[in-house]
Image 1 (cartoon, helix red, strand yellow):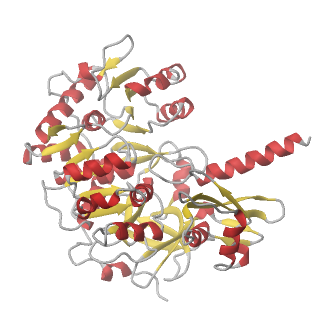
Image 2 (cartoon, rainbow, N blue to C red):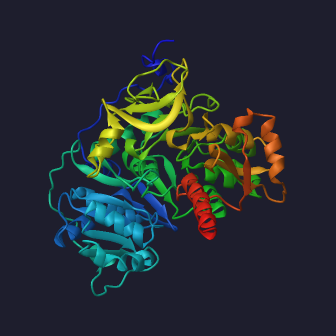
Image 3 (cartoon, helix red, strand yellow):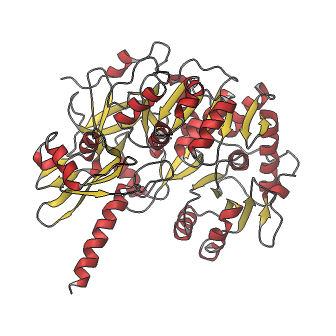
Length: 549
């Protein structure tokens, strides 16, 4: 068959333009435009308190002025570590207005991880939630950190020796230096990857990257009203998915964010009923939790009123999406999207104007080109229907990895971002993920895709969650192991699932081992840490070998 020739354009929704004219502006200027147009619109609701765009813009300007006074200048890297809250978002935009680079710091990081990120980025300042400060204090001497600013949303932070108080700094006059920013060249964010291969890398995202991706996602969405949408912000905004689909999306659309610092099903459902969001960007684990909530029926009317549900950050199992439609009695339309930190992050999404295409991550969003490249060289585009590596081009693609020229050259070749994901394109341009390139299990010479096996196991009535990984095997090199979380009040044994798989797949794919777990290890945005499971297996083997010597 022929190569893609932008096959997806014939499948585009009628109300979506394939090309957008992007403004030449910084993220700070994007906020200023919204403040000027919609000053009295609610920018956010948090803990029962509200902030209008006028108030939000004023506090951003006050904090920017204070940061400039204590020495933060254009190009400085500044760590920002804390949960979803207004203070985090105010600090984020204040830094961007000064031309500083936000180093997104996971609030779950332990000392070793914080120190690595601060040293790798060269950060000289960190803004941190008060409860997390002890971890930062323990690593200050092994970093170049000169300033620590502490914030809290529960009570004002009192000044202390060696620390700056957010609450004192925010009292500054709402004036700050006029910093010239080149949106296309200047970095806004260093978004560190999860470190699934080698050490964690800082993805360099410019102001233009992030604005482009925000506008691409808005164009892809349907029936949006400027100044009249409400976004449920549960996704962590320190992660690029939440930053683009909640925070930046809201600013660009003059929408109201309903901010929650963590995902707790009861609180989420009550919040939906009370504040009536119209958009819910989420992750598969969130929809799994709502599916199994014992009182979900009480909230059906509120759930159905939400216009857009999107799932990202990890593959959405078919059973989960079908169950969500079932529990809302067909009233909710849940679509799956796809992206990666290196693309700000969204590259594909299923259309909102039709039923989701089973198993597909959808079509590339406006101004995004994709190709399936051969697995041997990665440089040859292969025909429609064949399996290869998914590669991306578009205005949302990163500038590169921070101070890692070799890794940048390996990932960005001939104008294409190589995602490391294996997939195929159908004759209508829809993309289907087969698996992660690095997650392929090579057992006895056979290439085995974990996702194929996971989809089968999700069909079993006792399975709540499952992940499949390749574990070391002396004879086959690797062999297949399934890690299963059972549904409540069920019992099963290993052989039951092995026998089930034998009726559904080739023998070489059938798991040799099954381990039952109470939960699976995950990142904060719900992605299963498959590598951690493999590391545990390797550690067991090493311990066993050591005990025999």
